[in-house]
Image (cartoon, rainbow, N blue to C red; front, side):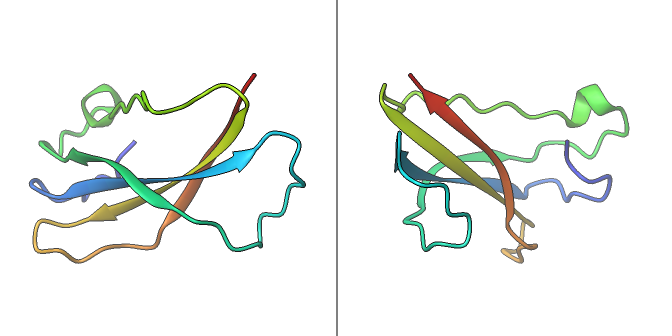
Length: 91
């Protein structure tokens, strides 16, 4: 969900790192993150359903783990702190 003060016209940038299945988990190790998507913030609606965004990564492949990082940026380009949101494995 977006923070209540998210600015219309801003963007959520979605970055992904590919981690081979079976590799050791090392959250503090350097990762190669690449930009895989952008979602434009259209509204600052107050209800949770109106603030919910969805992104489908169709570039995933079997045999890998993926770690995602989100970055919320305003319409004028100012960005907040990056958020590590999730990690998934594709069997």
